[in-house]
Length: 122
Length: 106
Image (cartoon, rainbow over all chains, first blue to last red; front, side, top):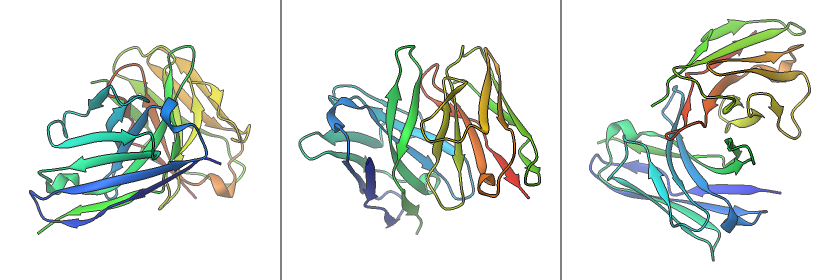
């Protein structure tokens, strides 16, 4: 059974830092691209970042570029998100999600963790 | 970025009713379109990928159609457990983008 368990959320002041983790189990972690997707309170879903299975390739939403850094440790089946220079608008539940890719080129977020809440406030 | 627009933003329906949600992309995305269901306080769940392919374990009462810019999610007979918010998402180009959501209420 695929399991994704996020941790590390909490209350942080504007300009502060936080590191989120996602512990994965039940699948071959190293062959899957992994993502962070966030959801502000009462709002819709916003993709944040993706990292390839090997960790060699990363992409970010413009809204977080230069402030958030995605990484992974395939030896520990762990995905991370280092969050620096946090702003009030970063307040959200952060989900880690696997990315399924089919032969036709489509990709979808097929497994999700339960999410961890980050609140940026003074 | 590709903009995804869902309609309606919310709808009221009864158990047993047929429900249709539409999603429009700001440019052609072929069939690179996915649908998710999210219940209150829970993570999203993948329902349909590649516009019309049912994800494993999803009831056959859910179906998807469309290509290019216009897509539809249909629930053939609404069940109590189907009351939730539904999101479309394009995977044609980076960044992947979601619709604003459609809340299905009683």
